[in-house]
Amino acid sequence: MHSLQVTGPGEVDWVEVPEPELADARGALVRPLTVATCDFDHLIVAGRAPVPYPVQIGHEVVGEVVAVGDDVAGVSPGDRVVVPFQISCGGCAQCGRGRTSCCEAVPWLSCYGLGLAAGDWGGAIADLLAVPYADAMLVPLPAGLAPAVAAAAGCNITDAYRCVAPQLAEMPGAPVLVAADGFQNIGLISVVLAAALGAERIDVVGLGAPAAGKAAELGARVLDSLDDVEPGAYPITVDASLNEEMLVAALRGTAPGGVCTISAMYPQPPDSFPLLELFAACATVQTGQPHVRGEIDDVLRLLEAGAVRTDLLVDETLPWESAAAAYAAGGGRKVAISRQEG
Ligand SMILES: [Zn+2]
Ligand SMILES: [Zn+2]
Image (cartoon, rainbow, N blue to C red; front, side, top):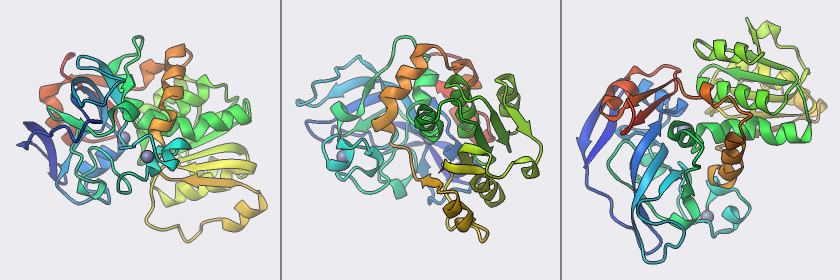
């Protein structure tokens, strides 16, 4: 079958790979229909991701179930589903706590579309995707949601959700700071969700076009420089920057008792990591992948409820045949590749 592969920086090509098969009676095969690009895809194509080439690309997926194993009860061929990007079994202790990115049944970081470092699960810009734990992993596509938006809920939107939603539920109306440089989509989506969930003030630094314009449209203040980040002013801070200076600004911006979520991954802490200031502020710093399967039901419910500006989440939907050019183009835009729309 055809699969889109990144072989080196800026090199994206269709290749022929073996068709996946049903793993066992709990598995399903899904034909990807709409796949959204992710911030991490852009890093892979740019040669900035800590994963070796080649990478079968694509991991924010809405597809159609085409085959299921004998033990699968929750989905049937023909069903449209959202596929979370992480493999999770639904039955281990971590999955039971909703911490599905730490699933104990599969190797650490088992994901679609992130290359062999994440296991040999394949990429979603392909004719078929094997889903090993179909009943646990697959989520019915909500009728009222655009496939491009639902696909993005399989990674970026849920990532942004965990950065702001539980915090705003605990601290209603609290001011939010979003630092976004390398992860433009997660940065913008954090702003979109924070606005929908009632943050009384949203400051954002590091967003480029077109995301900065969208953030401003929602009433966010687009700061000109890190000097404008007020230390200790934000109970909720988000680092989606991959930029050490911005990370430090977000940490310093966290208010006493606040929560800073580091969505970007760093090989090591910056020299100026303000550990003493964070201690003094009794701040919580959390990092790691989002637990997509554990949170996606809440995310889809929120998106369906109508308060979120879902029209701001995806910049453009392109035909499937243009996937190679779309991924090679890189940049901060969020694009969906669809077999159905053009
Ligand atoms: Zn992603
Ligand atoms: Zn598990």
